[in-house]
Image (tube, rainbow, N blue to C red; front, side, top):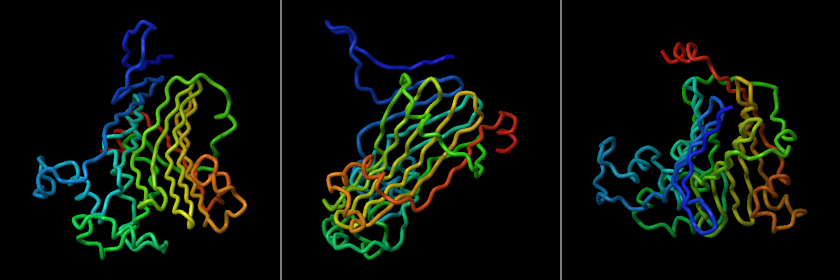
Amino acid sequence: MEMKQIIQTQETENGPVRLPVDSETHTYDDWTISYTKSHILKSVCVNDNACVRDDPSCCELCVYNFALELPHLPDMVFHKNILTVCHRGGARLEFNPIDALKQVRNEKLDLKVACSDEWKESRPAADTQEKVKPFDWSFTTEYKGTIGGGIRVDATDQKIDMFKLMKREPIYFYHDLTLFEDELHDHGISVLSVKVRVMPSGFYILLRFFLRVDHVLIRINDTRFHYEKGNDYILREYTHREAKVEQLKHVPPALFTNPNEIAEQLPVIRKVTEKLTILAEDDAMEGSS
């Protein structure tokens, strides 16, 4: 089995020390798993608001604004934080913030809380030129990853074996990326993150959207991906959990800020499992033609 990880180190008196990097690549059998990361998206157009849609010189902020057409972006968008999983045969999965934000509803939010008015008032005038235009200020997304060519998606009754994932194994590769985050004007948090873990038996990815509106609601949208060595498919399991805070009186409030702990206390609203079959190269080419 071929495994290759590219990292940077610096020699010191105590031996090599790993340096912070903006990208890494790990090879596991027929798979290449890589990520890039960088600073947050600038909040001001670098071209004095003169950017034109589809123009090569359009700044990164305006690329997002043109693509999403939301009245406002999250406080922190990590536009270069991208995780990719590629198969030798051409199959590709990607996790990026712009595709996730494309699934935020650009319509009136059902959730009515006092902080929504404060949120609007806290935004600069430039951000609220169309503030009468309603949108989901919680940035809730049901993003399940971006599927490229070479993959067929089918419904399945198979389930991800969480007990198998809890088995102790060496970790060949691990990383955690934040895709976007907003503190809802100090009334909670909305954050989307993705984690990847590679073990001898395969790899596991958790894409998690966590929303906490203080004193009102907690919501978690989890999408899990599990590939087991030797299979020609990946299982993808999407779970939507949610509860109003008044339904969680039996839960210590200290847990409200910990997604891992509070997830177990939230009822499952919807759960969907799919099989992502890795197509042979000939089938993938035929499907794309």
